[in-house]
Image (cartoon, rainbow, N blue to C red):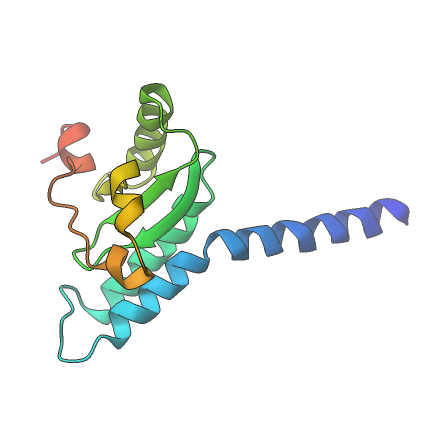
Length: 137
């Protein structure tokens, strides 16, 4: 009985942590879908699909925060900003989402971020797409 109660509490805690980690995914989706004047690069369904990728990315070991980008990429703030940690995160992301783009937010960029909208408007075009990294056409 104690094992069942402990398992239930662990699941509730894990769900709460996952929800907190994906908060910026939710906020960036709300911003992108609520942008007046049709400033969307993708369809609402494409943003909903991107939201799922963003949530899964936010749960990756080296990801502190994840955001959806207007152009369909995912931006992350890494927990560790080393070459090895970045390469590992990129490999994990590209294995899971070979047709997506992951953009790392630099330390310098973090200083200029004032809101989720600032991040959502960032471009992922300077990042190498997973498609190219994995050699897919």
